[in-house]
Length: 323
Ligand code: CP
Ligand code: NVA
Image (cartoon, rainbow, N blue to C red; front, side):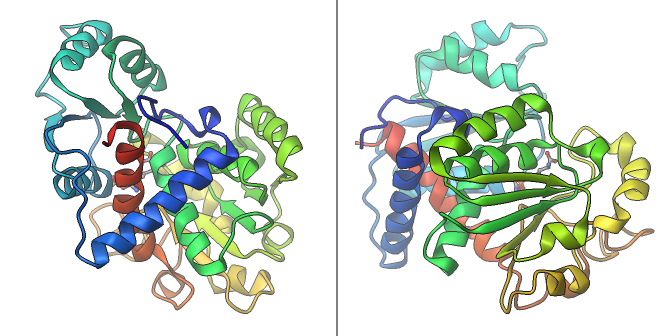
Protein backbone atom coordinates (compact mmCIF):
# COMPACT_ATOMS: atom_id res chain seq x y z
CA UNK A 1 0.00 0.00 0.00
CA UNK A 2 1.46 3.37 -0.96
CA UNK A 3 0.09 6.47 0.78
CA UNK A 4 3.17 8.66 0.14
CA UNK A 5 2.38 12.33 -0.28
CA UNK A 6 -1.28 11.96 0.75
CA UNK A 7 -3.05 14.34 3.12
CA UNK A 8 -5.03 12.99 6.08
CA UNK A 9 -7.97 15.40 6.41
CA UNK A 10 -10.94 13.07 6.84
CA UNK A 11 -11.80 9.37 6.67
CA UNK A 12 -14.07 10.09 3.67
CA UNK A 13 -10.92 10.20 1.53
CA UNK A 14 -9.59 6.81 2.75
CA UNK A 15 -10.81 3.39 1.59
CA UNK A 16 -11.56 0.47 3.92
CA UNK A 17 -8.25 -1.14 2.89
CA UNK A 18 -6.29 2.05 3.47
CA UNK A 19 -7.75 2.46 6.97
CA UNK A 20 -6.96 -1.20 7.74
CA UNK A 21 -3.43 -0.65 6.48
CA UNK A 22 -2.94 2.37 8.79
CA UNK A 23 -4.25 0.34 11.76
CA UNK A 24 -1.92 -2.58 10.98
CA UNK A 25 1.02 -0.21 10.60
CA UNK A 26 0.11 1.39 13.97
CA UNK A 27 0.10 -2.02 15.65
CA UNK A 28 3.48 -2.80 14.08
CA UNK A 29 5.00 0.53 15.19
CA UNK A 30 3.60 -0.06 18.69
CA UNK A 31 5.26 -3.50 18.82
CA UNK A 32 8.54 -2.02 17.58
CA UNK A 33 8.51 0.79 20.14
CA UNK A 34 7.89 -1.74 22.94
CA UNK A 35 10.86 -3.77 21.64
CA UNK A 36 13.04 -0.64 21.65
CA UNK A 37 13.28 -0.51 17.85
CA UNK A 38 13.08 2.95 16.28
CA UNK A 39 13.35 2.83 12.48
CA UNK A 40 13.68 6.67 12.24
CA UNK A 41 11.88 6.83 8.90
CA UNK A 42 11.39 10.61 9.24
CA UNK A 43 15.08 11.41 9.82
CA UNK A 44 15.92 14.96 8.72
CA UNK A 45 12.28 16.04 8.25
CA UNK A 46 10.72 19.10 9.90
CA UNK A 47 7.08 19.10 10.94
CA UNK A 48 4.91 22.17 11.70
CA UNK A 49 2.27 21.69 14.40
CA UNK A 50 -0.38 24.45 14.19
CA UNK A 51 -2.75 24.66 17.16
CA UNK A 52 -5.65 27.16 17.33
CA UNK A 53 -7.20 25.13 20.18
CA UNK A 54 -5.57 23.54 23.26
CA UNK A 55 -4.46 19.91 23.31
CA UNK A 56 -2.74 17.39 25.55
CA UNK A 57 -2.93 14.09 23.65
CA UNK A 58 -2.74 15.24 20.03
CA UNK A 59 0.13 17.65 20.57
CA UNK A 60 2.14 15.19 22.67
CA UNK A 61 1.42 12.32 20.27
CA UNK A 62 2.74 14.33 17.30
CA UNK A 63 5.81 15.53 19.20
CA UNK A 64 6.78 12.10 20.57
CA UNK A 65 6.06 10.37 17.25
CA UNK A 66 8.26 12.94 15.44
CA UNK A 67 11.11 12.49 17.90
CA UNK A 68 10.84 8.66 17.79
CA UNK A 69 11.11 8.77 14.01
CA UNK A 70 13.94 11.32 13.91
CA UNK A 71 11.93 14.39 12.77
CA UNK A 72 11.96 17.89 14.28
CA UNK A 73 8.52 19.09 15.48
CA UNK A 74 7.86 22.86 15.66
CA UNK A 75 4.85 23.96 17.75
CA UNK A 76 3.01 26.99 16.35
CA UNK A 77 0.35 27.93 18.88
CA UNK A 78 -2.47 30.44 18.91
CA UNK A 79 -0.85 33.86 19.06
CA UNK A 80 2.46 32.64 17.57
CA UNK A 81 1.52 33.02 13.91
CA UNK A 82 -0.74 35.26 11.82
CA UNK A 83 -2.85 32.47 10.26
CA UNK A 84 -6.09 33.94 8.97
CA UNK A 85 -5.61 37.17 10.94
CA UNK A 86 -2.86 39.22 9.34
CA UNK A 87 -2.03 36.65 6.65
CA UNK A 88 -4.32 34.48 4.53
CA UNK A 89 -4.36 30.74 5.10
CA UNK A 90 -3.18 30.28 1.49
CA UNK A 91 -0.11 32.51 2.03
CA UNK A 92 0.83 30.90 5.37
CA UNK A 93 0.43 27.48 3.73
CA UNK A 94 2.78 28.41 0.88
CA UNK A 95 5.41 29.75 3.29
CA UNK A 96 5.27 26.74 5.62
CA UNK A 97 5.34 24.39 2.63
CA UNK A 98 8.68 25.90 1.55
CA UNK A 99 10.24 25.12 4.94
CA UNK A 100 8.48 22.10 6.42
CA UNK A 101 7.96 18.57 5.12
CA UNK A 102 4.54 18.09 6.77
CA UNK A 103 1.91 20.17 8.59
CA UNK A 104 -0.50 19.24 11.39
CA UNK A 105 -3.49 21.53 11.95
CA UNK A 106 -5.89 21.67 14.91
CA UNK A 107 -8.49 24.40 14.91
CA UNK A 108 -11.98 25.60 14.25
CA UNK A 109 -13.03 25.70 10.57
CA UNK A 110 -12.58 22.50 8.58
CA UNK A 111 -12.05 24.69 5.51
CA UNK A 112 -8.75 25.91 7.05
CA UNK A 113 -7.21 22.43 6.99
CA UNK A 114 -8.57 21.91 3.46
CA UNK A 115 -6.92 25.18 2.34
CA UNK A 116 -3.61 24.33 4.04
CA UNK A 117 -3.64 21.08 2.07
CA UNK A 118 -4.54 22.86 -1.16
CA UNK A 119 -1.76 25.46 -1.00
CA UNK A 120 1.17 24.02 1.02
CA UNK A 121 2.44 21.33 -1.36
CA UNK A 122 3.29 19.00 1.56
CA UNK A 123 1.19 16.39 3.44
CA UNK A 124 -1.30 18.01 5.85
CA UNK A 125 -2.82 16.07 8.78
CA UNK A 126 -6.03 17.04 10.55
CA UNK A 127 -5.52 17.07 14.34
CA UNK A 128 -9.18 18.11 14.92
CA UNK A 129 -11.55 20.63 13.38
CA UNK A 130 -15.14 21.51 14.26
CA UNK A 131 -16.23 18.88 11.72
CA UNK A 132 -13.84 15.92 12.05
CA UNK A 133 -11.20 14.32 14.30
CA UNK A 134 -9.82 11.50 12.13
CA UNK A 135 -6.54 10.71 13.95
CA UNK A 136 -8.64 10.11 17.09
CA UNK A 137 -10.82 7.56 15.32
CA UNK A 138 -7.76 5.60 14.16
CA UNK A 139 -6.73 5.29 17.84
CA UNK A 140 -10.30 4.31 18.79
CA UNK A 141 -10.43 1.59 16.14
CA UNK A 142 -6.97 0.28 17.05
CA UNK A 143 -8.17 -0.07 20.67
CA UNK A 144 -11.30 -1.95 19.55
CA UNK A 145 -9.26 -4.18 17.22
CA UNK A 146 -6.84 -5.01 20.06
CA UNK A 147 -9.67 -6.31 22.26
CA UNK A 148 -12.03 -7.88 19.72
CA UNK A 149 -9.55 -8.84 16.99
CA UNK A 150 -11.61 -7.20 14.21
CA UNK A 151 -13.88 -4.23 13.38
CA UNK A 152 -16.38 -5.68 10.90
CA UNK A 153 -19.68 -6.47 12.60
CA UNK A 154 -18.73 -4.78 15.90
CA UNK A 155 -21.75 -3.12 17.50
CA UNK A 156 -20.68 0.38 18.47
CA UNK A 157 -22.77 3.15 20.03
CA UNK A 158 -21.76 6.78 20.30
CA UNK A 159 -23.85 8.42 23.04
CA UNK A 160 -24.34 12.16 23.69
CA UNK A 161 -23.69 15.12 21.38
CA UNK A 162 -24.44 13.34 18.12
CA UNK A 163 -23.44 16.23 15.84
CA UNK A 164 -19.92 17.00 17.00
CA UNK A 165 -16.58 16.18 15.37
CA UNK A 166 -16.31 12.81 17.17
CA UNK A 167 -19.82 11.65 16.24
CA UNK A 168 -19.27 12.69 12.60
CA UNK A 169 -15.91 10.97 12.27
CA UNK A 170 -16.98 7.77 14.05
CA UNK A 171 -20.06 7.55 11.82
CA UNK A 172 -17.97 7.77 8.64
CA UNK A 173 -15.25 5.46 10.04
CA UNK A 174 -17.74 2.83 11.24
CA UNK A 175 -19.47 2.90 7.85
CA UNK A 176 -16.15 2.33 6.09
CA UNK A 177 -15.23 -0.56 8.40
CA UNK A 178 -18.58 -2.40 8.18
CA UNK A 179 -19.72 -1.89 11.76
CA UNK A 180 -23.20 -1.82 13.33
CA UNK A 181 -23.07 1.83 14.37
CA UNK A 182 -25.59 3.74 16.46
CA UNK A 183 -25.88 7.35 17.52
CA UNK A 184 -27.85 7.63 20.74
CA UNK A 185 -28.80 11.29 21.22
CA UNK A 186 -31.77 13.65 21.46
CA UNK A 187 -33.14 14.43 17.98
CA UNK A 188 -31.95 18.03 18.17
CA UNK A 189 -28.37 16.71 18.40
CA UNK A 190 -28.54 14.16 15.58
CA UNK A 191 -25.76 14.53 12.97
CA UNK A 192 -26.31 16.67 9.88
CA UNK A 193 -28.01 15.00 6.92
CA UNK A 194 -24.89 15.38 4.76
CA UNK A 195 -22.85 13.22 7.19
CA UNK A 196 -25.58 10.59 7.58
CA UNK A 197 -26.01 10.37 3.81
CA UNK A 198 -22.28 9.87 3.18
CA UNK A 199 -22.17 7.27 5.96
CA UNK A 200 -25.12 5.39 4.43
CA UNK A 201 -23.48 5.52 1.00
CA UNK A 202 -20.29 3.91 2.37
CA UNK A 203 -22.38 1.46 4.43
CA UNK A 204 -23.96 0.11 1.22
CA UNK A 205 -20.52 -1.03 0.05
CA UNK A 206 -19.34 -2.54 3.36
CA UNK A 207 -22.52 -3.98 4.89
CA UNK A 208 -22.35 -1.51 7.79
CA UNK A 209 -25.55 -0.46 9.58
CA UNK A 210 -26.17 3.13 10.68
CA UNK A 211 -28.92 3.81 13.23
CA UNK A 212 -29.93 7.08 14.90
CA UNK A 213 -32.07 6.77 18.01
CA UNK A 214 -33.22 8.80 21.01
CA UNK A 215 -33.88 5.62 22.98
CA UNK A 216 -30.97 4.77 25.29
CA UNK A 217 -32.07 1.22 26.19
CA UNK A 218 -32.85 0.23 22.61
CA UNK A 219 -29.63 1.83 21.30
CA UNK A 220 -27.38 0.21 23.91
CA UNK A 221 -28.82 -3.30 23.48
CA UNK A 222 -26.20 -5.72 22.14
CA UNK A 223 -23.38 -3.15 22.05
CA UNK A 224 -19.76 -4.27 22.19
CA UNK A 225 -18.57 -0.67 22.58
CA UNK A 226 -20.11 2.39 24.27
CA UNK A 227 -18.41 5.68 23.42
CA UNK A 228 -18.99 9.22 24.60
CA UNK A 229 -17.41 12.68 24.46
CA UNK A 230 -17.89 16.00 26.26
CA UNK A 231 -21.35 17.56 25.94
CA UNK A 232 -19.95 20.92 24.79
CA UNK A 233 -16.91 20.88 22.51
CA UNK A 234 -14.07 23.42 22.45
CA UNK A 235 -15.55 26.74 21.33
CA UNK A 236 -19.09 25.82 22.52
CA UNK A 237 -18.61 26.59 26.22
CA UNK A 238 -21.61 28.97 26.17
CA UNK A 239 -23.87 25.99 25.34
CA UNK A 240 -22.87 24.05 28.44
CA UNK A 241 -25.95 24.71 30.62
CA UNK A 242 -28.39 23.86 27.79
CA UNK A 243 -26.48 20.71 26.89
CA UNK A 244 -26.42 19.51 30.50
CA UNK A 245 -30.23 19.79 30.64
CA UNK A 246 -30.65 18.05 27.29
CA UNK A 247 -28.09 15.28 27.75
CA UNK A 248 -28.54 14.23 31.38
CA UNK A 249 -30.48 11.07 30.42
CA UNK A 250 -27.61 10.15 28.07
CA UNK A 251 -24.86 9.76 30.66
CA UNK A 252 -22.96 6.45 30.31
CA UNK A 253 -23.41 4.82 33.72
CA UNK A 254 -23.67 1.26 35.02
CA UNK A 255 -27.35 1.05 33.98
CA UNK A 256 -26.30 1.70 30.39
CA UNK A 257 -23.48 -0.83 30.65
CA UNK A 258 -26.04 -3.40 31.88
CA UNK A 259 -28.42 -2.41 29.08
CA UNK A 260 -25.89 -3.72 26.53
CA UNK A 261 -26.59 -7.23 27.81
CA UNK A 262 -22.92 -8.02 27.09
CA UNK A 263 -20.56 -9.58 29.61
CA UNK A 264 -17.57 -7.40 28.83
CA UNK A 265 -18.53 -4.31 26.81
CA UNK A 266 -15.83 -1.73 26.20
CA UNK A 267 -16.12 1.89 27.33
CA UNK A 268 -14.24 4.50 25.27
CA UNK A 269 -13.88 8.30 25.47
CA UNK A 270 -11.54 10.49 23.41
CA UNK A 271 -10.74 12.52 26.58
CA UNK A 272 -10.60 14.92 28.34
CA UNK A 273 -13.67 13.65 30.28
CA UNK A 274 -15.91 15.03 33.01
CA UNK A 275 -16.31 11.96 35.23
CA UNK A 276 -16.11 13.57 38.71
CA UNK A 277 -16.01 17.02 40.30
CA UNK A 278 -12.22 17.34 40.36
CA UNK A 279 -11.86 19.80 37.46
CA UNK A 280 -12.56 23.51 37.37
CA UNK A 281 -15.45 23.02 34.90
CA UNK A 282 -17.06 20.07 36.71
CA UNK A 283 -16.60 21.37 40.26
CA UNK A 284 -20.28 22.28 40.68
CA UNK A 285 -21.99 19.68 38.54
CA UNK A 286 -19.75 16.60 38.94
CA UNK A 287 -19.79 13.73 36.46
CA UNK A 288 -21.44 14.58 33.15
CA UNK A 289 -21.12 12.34 30.08
CA UNK A 290 -19.81 9.33 32.05
CA UNK A 291 -20.14 8.27 35.68
CA UNK A 292 -16.95 7.92 37.68
CA UNK A 293 -17.90 4.29 38.31
CA UNK A 294 -17.81 3.45 34.60
CA UNK A 295 -14.76 5.60 33.88
CA UNK A 296 -12.75 3.75 36.54
CA UNK A 297 -14.26 0.32 35.83
CA UNK A 298 -12.76 -2.75 34.17
CA UNK A 299 -14.81 -1.88 31.05
CA UNK A 300 -12.90 1.36 30.53
CA UNK A 301 -10.05 1.30 28.00
CA UNK A 302 -9.59 5.07 27.85
CA UNK A 303 -5.88 5.13 28.70
CA UNK A 304 -5.01 2.39 26.17
CA UNK A 305 -6.98 4.52 23.72
CA UNK A 306 -4.99 7.66 24.71
CA UNK A 307 -1.68 5.82 24.28
CA UNK A 308 -2.84 4.60 20.88
CA UNK A 309 -3.10 8.23 19.72
CA UNK A 310 0.71 8.23 19.52
CA UNK A 311 1.07 4.94 17.61
CA UNK A 312 -1.66 5.83 15.11
CA UNK A 313 -0.44 9.41 14.53
CA UNK A 314 3.04 7.98 13.99
CA UNK A 315 1.59 5.56 11.43
CA UNK A 316 -0.11 8.42 9.54
CA UNK A 317 3.15 10.40 9.34
CA UNK A 318 5.27 7.36 8.46
CA UNK A 319 2.82 6.22 5.74
CA UNK A 320 2.46 9.61 4.09
CA UNK A 321 5.99 10.98 4.57
CA UNK A 322 8.32 8.21 5.77
CA UNK A 323 11.27 6.76 3.91
N1 CP B 1 -8.58 13.44 22.41
C1 CP B 1 -7.86 14.54 22.11
O1 CP B 1 -7.79 15.00 20.99
O2 CP B 1 -7.21 15.07 23.19
P1 CP B 1 -6.47 16.48 23.22
O3 CP B 1 -7.53 17.54 23.06
O4 CP B 1 -5.81 16.51 24.55
O5 CP B 1 -5.49 16.53 22.09
N1 NVA C 1 -15.57 17.08 20.70
C1 NVA C 1 -14.40 17.45 21.47
C2 NVA C 1 -13.28 16.50 21.19
C3 NVA C 1 -12.03 16.74 22.02
C4 NVA C 1 -10.94 15.76 21.71
C5 NVA C 1 -14.00 18.88 21.13
O1 NVA C 1 -13.96 19.22 19.95
O2 NVA C 1 -13.73 19.65 22.05
